[in-house]
Length: 532
Image 1 (cartoon, rainbow, N blue to C red):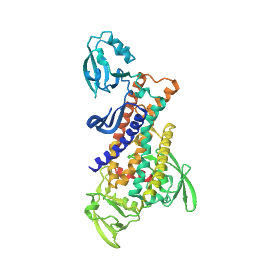
Image 2 (tube, rainbow, N blue to C red; image 1 turned 120 degrees about the vertical axis):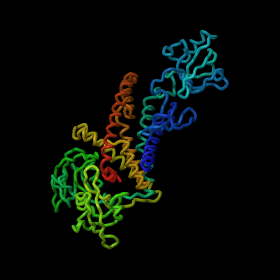
Image 3 (cartoon, rainbow, N blue to C red; image 1 turned 60 degrees about the horizontal axis):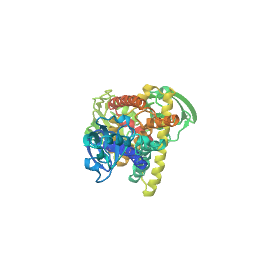
Image 4 (cartoon, rainbow, N blue to C red; image 1 turned 60 degrees about the vertical axis):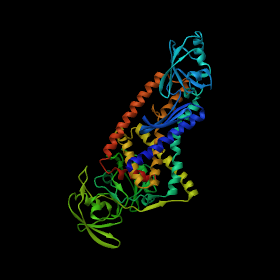
């Protein structure tokens, strides 16, 4: 339940703030906004205020703002019906759309006055008019005089139509959605710092390697425990945070890593591979003591009575050097009872425990995570605003550089399509991480929301049909050609874009399901930690 609520919270905020950007700029530009919906599909609940219907719809994976004139509606729109006029008495209302008139081809009429003139030739004849109101079609029997009191426009002439706005106005309306997503962290991160958030202490420390996984890329390249990482591909590093970002931004790439070892510098080369979780895996880690952090519910550790803070000294009488040493012993002991010598409150005691095999690899696990020293970042009201804005600017810059760097490497062939495909995450993974973030408290959830918001804003600016970036591309082409693309061309582009996005969504869901087989939360957390 926590996962579902956290997911709806994150998605709800991201969709609302994005669509609010479109909505505000559309209203500010005088465009007629017909609908503001959170979600797609069937309406769950909603209300109408003025000319706009506000909805919450069934599928929560997005939303939309429907503006008049986006899709070539055609016909005529009745902008205003004068009170007590003959048109009002007949049954017309402001906002009605005239779809058809019996015996008249509306496609041959480009002005409302042309329609009035055509009908007035037979003043006593009663015409059947079909109008659309609230997505329902209604028929009205009307004589020509029944149109008195109506101010109406064809779509081509309607001044409040989106398509009749200047290129600059349309650009503002389209760009406002991604802009709001990029601006959201500047609101959320000050709140995060007011609430206070715990950051793993190692992230602020120099990147000294505490573990090299046997037979990993790093091990084969010659990296050793105790090496201090100075550079990755020529980029200087000062902290583990810098190192995490550098490695995660180079999937499936050749890395040149400069390290300091025994007072000398060495440059080693190896390829960063993509792990099943879609993350960069090189086989190194920060120094970690064998101290218990969190304990999973229902795990062997919980049943055996292990507690947070317990230090594991030995297993079956064999001294444990660090977390990685302990983990390597445990994974070889699936379904075998072992004796842990632990230190708790300055006392030593023995605990018997039977590791359970993991579903995927069959390796033993007891259901614990490592303990990490944490630094709490919590400030007063004004200091939170200053620090939050600085952190938001830094986060936006880092994510932007990472994403653009990733695209550049993909285009130039430095990253394969296969590796890029594995990096795509979808709604299932976002839901799972949202739940994990929610368990860390409101501040952690808001921080995660800010991180996803930046990614959503940037991705929406990609020049792909169906995305805001695609619409911006159309406007750029229109500004060069001095005329818009044809409706036929737009329809073809939209179909191609829709097909592409559906493919990406299926790929994302497939990746999500694959990642859920492993310990994805622990892996993903390393990426999120890098941006704290």
